[in-house]
Amino acid sequence: MELVYHDLSRIDEVKAFIQNWEDSSDYIHCTTSGSTGIPKRIKLSKKQIEHSATRTIQYFGLHQGMKAGLALSMESIAGKLMVVRSMLARMELHVLPVKKNPLAQVDIPLDFIALVPSQASEFLENSLGRQENANVLIGGAPLSSGQHQAIQTYWKNAFQSYGMTETASHVALRRITSVEDAPYEALDGIRFSEAHSQLVIHCKDLTQGEIHTTDCVDLLSPSSFRYLGRIDHVINTAGNKVHPEELEFKLKEHIAGVFMIIPYEDAQYGQGIGLLLIDEKNPLTIAGFKTIEGIKTYEIPRKYMVVPEIIRNSNDKIDRNAMLDIAKNHVWTSIL
Image 1 (cartoon, rainbow, N blue to C red):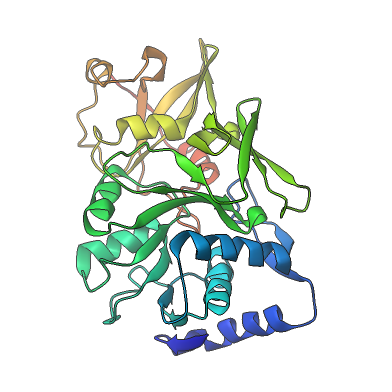
Image 2: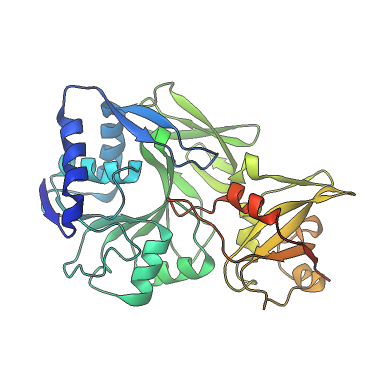
């Protein structure tokens, strides 16, 4: 692997990981994304990481002579895996700055790169360059409708990934096309089942052989599923379970700007469906929501709240716990 640094401040972190990878230990220490709370320090076997990297190399046909881009922090499993893939496939690895638009100053076409949605958006909005033929992994957070459209228009080989630190990066991918709710498809050697409507990942590389997630899915087959949302985010309103992520997907073409769904206390129904906005110009009416295809009556937001920002964590995911705390200090307004 040849290293090309576009950001010299990253030399030490990349060098430290490579030394860790090549030493005599059997494990690499990683930090989880903190999606379910405080990030945890865990260790993954180098063999598990190598198998994960090999699956991606085989899926995309990566090989010596190709150019890969490292645009993510070495603290993340995604950053670590990009280095390992480049070593195993003997690719030329371009180490880019970890910022909103890591590709801004890159004037050579890359063959493979991983980005979070905000990085992809910043590149597409401000500096379209010579990257249209790259294989692109998008992960870390859901895509908005606008992001999805922009990505599939520019990149023909862009994929949204599903995975976690515990699985040593992604175990399933879906090509980003005009079909926004296309299912995720398992990589080689991965199989899925469900327990209580939550995804179970099966793979002989995993320490226990399987991982029980808290992700609610529509399981289509042992190798494909549609993602609905996290079980710990479910809103129970009058006995009906609503997945905020799924409802946000239904509403994203009808609400301008950034928004999210959270619960509020309701004396009659236990929890109500609340809408957090950073732009109060949206014309919100109950009648208007009823016209949206696929939305159920109990899914209709009945109150809204305007907040200064939607907080995201370091992986570009909405920090729902932080937003729930912020909502406690603001006033809900009824949607008429």
